[in-house]
Amino acid sequence: MIQKITSVFILAAFLVACSKNALTGKNQLTLLPEGELQTMATQEYQNFLSTNKVVAASGNRDAEMVRRVGQRITRAVETYYADKGLTDKLAGFKWEYNLVNDAAVNAWCMPGGKIVIYTGILPVTQNEAALAAVMGHEVSHALLQHGNQRMSQGLLQQLGGVALSVAVANKPAETQNLFLGAYGVGSNVAVILPFSRKHELEADRYGLIWTAMAGYNPQEAIGLWERMEKLSNGQKPPEFMSTHPAEGRRIDQLNKYMPEAMTYYKPVGK
Ligand SMILES: [Zn+2]
Image 1 (tube, helix red, strand yellow):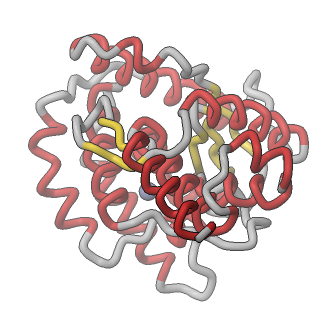
Image 2 (cartoon, protein in one colour):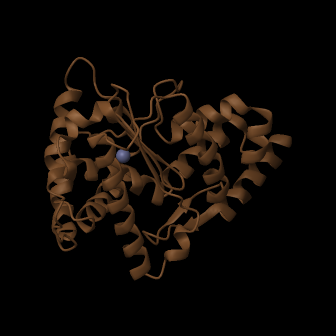
């Protein structure tokens, strides 16, 4: 009986939680208020930065590049949202971009635009436009609330669909693990949760648009993902590819999205 009531309650919560994503206009299942996740992200981001080796931006070319690319991608997103009358949807975003000294091939973006690039991914990106493609992809996951959907599912499956504040209060370690897993943060997470194919395609499509609007040639994304796939076949597949699986068809899809992205491309000087 209790179980039945619980499932009815959860179903009701789901119906209430079915919201439209501002970017795609499509319905999606987000149980958690994005604002609460942004608050959690602020704490988790600070926690991550204080326990990892952040490369100071002043005087370091790579860290400066990360900041420059981040700012350009942000401007692209803000312009796109403003053109569509969606600026209020970015109200909770307090963008930050940091490079951490870590050999893992990885990058991620927490809710509210908290971005980390690992130095280990730079030999794979090789150039600034490909780094923009990585950042554009990560930012898209955040804007499309993919992490929210993953976190919602995780809370439902593992902690019985309780509110985030209740989960944090009662099961802080488990909730933190769910959060880090949902956003693809770090190798210390117990379970690495790959984004679904649908999420990957959406992030690829919008990622190309931000890259182009930021003044970088989106076609650099092709070479980037080819290099990633090549690494995946090696002995130590990059962490990035376990959270962002390609299933071998990514390049075809990228080529399909490319004409749309190219309409946004206006190269700018470095
Ligand atoms: Zn992805």
